[in-house]
Length: 239
Image (cartoon, rainbow, N blue to C red; front, side, top):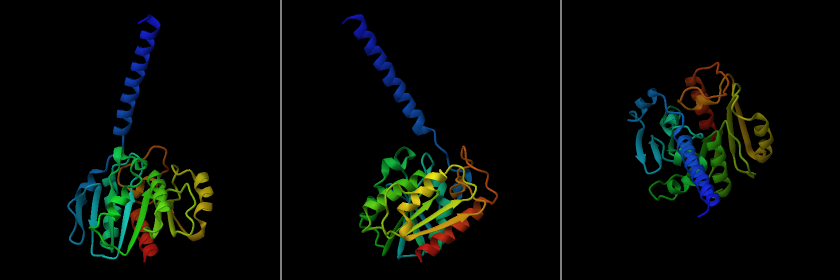
């Protein structure tokens, strides 16, 4: 083997090793849930929390409607327990999906395993997602309109036309992470049946409980306030 070929092989091998190391670093560099979330893992008097194959099942007093939630990119999925525990307590059972490598686009069809499991029988299924998780959720909704009764976007937007699907879009007025120009343009894809709610003083990160997010705006309301407003809008949308 001549020196040029040998050198080229060494360079290729070095690049493979570098890319592998970067990939490992990237998928392990994610926002962890606040310690306060641990208090929700054992459930409450009205809501049980069950670890299922692809996430958590929050089973409350309701039996008719369920919501499947896709977390934001590189956000630990349990971070959203405080928000959806309240929703389950008020009648909408919730599934918080644990995504591969904390990236929803790697598990965009995760809802299939839940809806088609046969274990759950709800009259209506809703799908939701935060940030890039909402993009993945919208893609699922577009391709499964026969199964999904409505889409709920938290600081997110679709990338394809949703037709006549009912959509609830919620974002905070102080959100600096959401690309507002892209969001406004995306309204053309969901204007047929869109309900939009802007949380005055809310930001991008306070839908979950994982601390501050790089590049986000400063919220002027508490995380609890933002979650309460979000939950109430979701309940009104579903009921």
